[in-house]
Image (cartoon, rainbow, N blue to C red):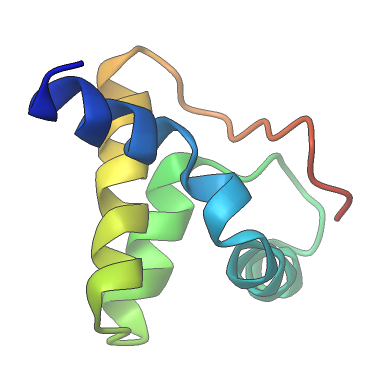
Length: 83
């Protein structure tokens, strides 16, 4: 497998790798949105930027959001995660 394929697989599996962090992010976003709509990838990006979260993990989450948006997805759906 090439290096770029490995990076892509890591991006796709980011929710498995950082499951607890995603739960915390979803909890924060649900408080903000108050259940009025589904959580979008742009919501996650905006939260990370607004709260000035820094570090490799948040960079990976931003890449994951960007990847999904480029795939034409806007609403976050994570089947394996019980939120």
